[in-house]
Length: 444
DNA sequence: CGGTGAGCCTGTTCGC
DNA sequence: TGCGAACAGGCTCACC
Ligand SMILES: [Zn+2]
Image (cartoon, rainbow, N blue to C red; front, side, top):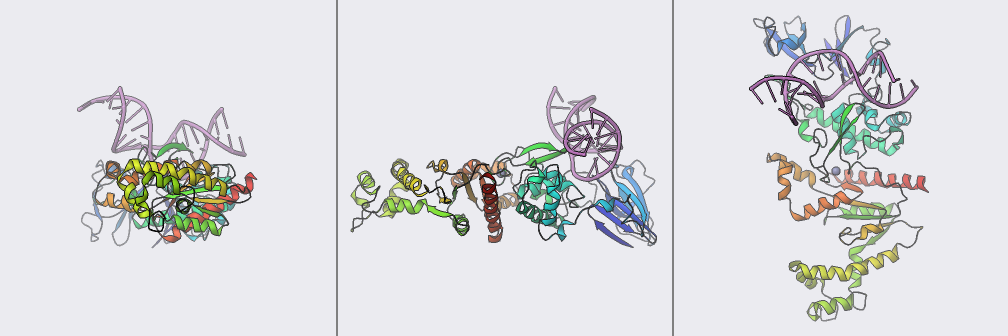
């Protein structure tokens, strides 16, 4: 006998009949055998123990010719069964299969989802949960998909772009594949002896994490109700872009987080790069704006024989002396800012400001949009979980630069996560650029 | 018509 | 410790 699956339905192909089975919330199947059966795999089913904790929820027992049993167990009795023939189970209007949408694994991109989204009156999350659009996405996974796609679950589905839908489809595949691989998500323990439970619950970014810090930005995860379902999201990571025209973009992030990759992608898209580090260097050249002031403050011992400032000496002083660092910054930052303001004057051009200390120097106020390039957070999280410690408790042990990073991330408009592959980062950047392009077209 | 909420069920958890 | 209320992974249908 054959068993197939379509969406959340199991299709039992008996000799003459088709039985459709939907487990709803808590339905489960157990392989079993009677006590003195020749078949010995699975658990021993003793129907005479009617009131046992387990048996009282067994509502159906399939007896097969090899004496194996299949028990249908469902605490809440939400599960449903439908009986059809081979002739009509795919076509009978009463068959739940006829209303089902596409299998997400077969989607090559977001074209189909986009076509559905445009006619959809409700939110993005409800679009994902609607089995007549895509099959197999439940409440946990809808939240996780929205999080990974950085789309607010409450966003009206018809406002989704084609790129949003591309991203949603690819994240759907990612989430469902991973969940299948790990045996699903066991979020409540209705499990009995010998029950295998899933492990995907350990991978959840938002579901069931209300009030806990977002793994990407540290913002406490929010919980609301959408379509009557508990809905979890990061109010910071899953934000819409500001609705003004975006001409000047500031990018920041820890050293070697991958900022250069982001800026080169923006340059390819026609943005003019403004490199604050380079400007700061240029200011210190003999005869330039900061040269004299820095010399007056730090003395002639920072000079090389040719009269130029030796930057490594300056760094040495500043690294161990916080007062000196503040002083140096107060000399350089206004100059850098003045140069940047001058450079971005041309209203017809778009600019990308690469500024390591974007917020510290107050340069975020020049930007229509700010981006933080984040890295290694996932790796950190994996380590924490592997050690069996709570991310929350460990938060205090984070090194200061990471703490700074998290503070910055809470201020920033967009976070690009560069912890995974180059391709993954590239995709985020490309879809961001496309989003900004669309936005600017509308707001013109 | 669209959107909301009740209903189906039982068990667990949380606050008083 | 007891006790009631809220809540739970899904989906349908009545009602406003
Ligand atoms: Zn976040």
